[in-house]
Length: 236
Image (cartoon, rainbow, N blue to C red; front, side, top):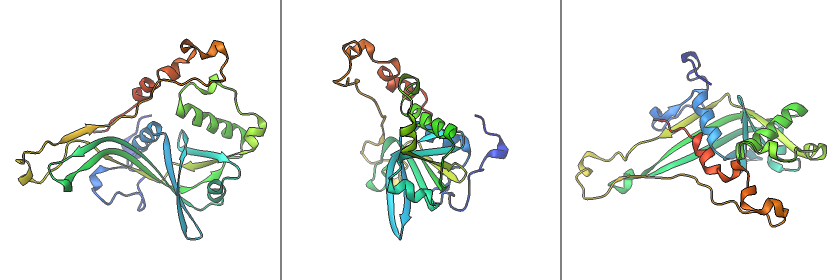
């Protein structure tokens, strides 16, 4: 998806405007969507009777909607369904920024903060599409390899949709920024890159013999780290 100049800043509001180092703020949908698509876990912030909560959970995106789901008995989901304000965040850590002074140490990162109100997805087609998005977000191609949810599972799963209409991204890249007087210090400085990688697949002990052999591991599982990093986008 490309973004035209008219769409730039379309997500910027008084809530989402980045106050600290505003030049790192991004408000166009494409930047926000790419960060959301690379992340795997979001943190959902909300308050009930004055008590704040921040809950980590998986998510999926379809166009300009972000979906979260869980058991129908989930306190978080039932609370969000009532229409309370939500603040959802996703953070990708790209590196440790090691400066010459302790004060200027930092991190290279890409993050998204999303505000809004969630609503329950009741349409069966949209609900199924959301569950597919969750599965495909974890491992592309997985939905077609597994059994789809049955009617009982659909009925006991609560899916909420949060529109991506009020959000911002904040991105830091590059080397440390030291005080001019510190550049001559005999201290190593630079960036230690960090990446998320997968290990070797571990077979379920209850697999049939024909599926327990290494060659039976699907390509999208065996090559997960490659497929995941292939869709990675570093913003300069």
